[in-house]
Length: 104
Image 1 (cartoon, rainbow, N blue to C red):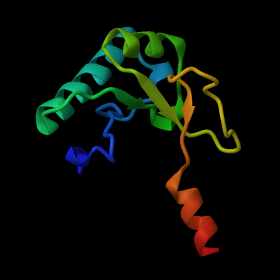
Image 2 (image 1 turned 45 degrees about the vertical axis):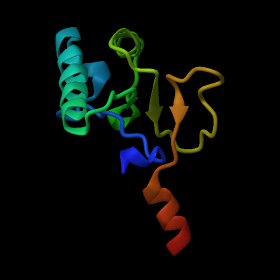
Image 3 (image 1 turned 60 degrees about the vertical axis):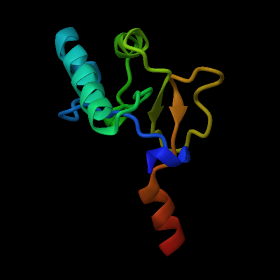
């Protein structure tokens, strides 16, 4: 799937915590273990991160940049374009919202 170049797989932490609520050390662990496991299993660099619960904070963004990520994805209902030239604030469409719109 990733070899096609049409799909980009990013990391999303190991235990799905609210990133703004955990310690600095735990943030590093969540970021690095998730990244390392995916890179090991996919044999390719992981460059994108999706925030659990869309719970972003400046410290986590700084750490993500430090550890080689090029951007993040968040899901905030009703917001179409949060990033305004900042790849660390890209809003994504929740597939469940899209599916509900199609089905109902």
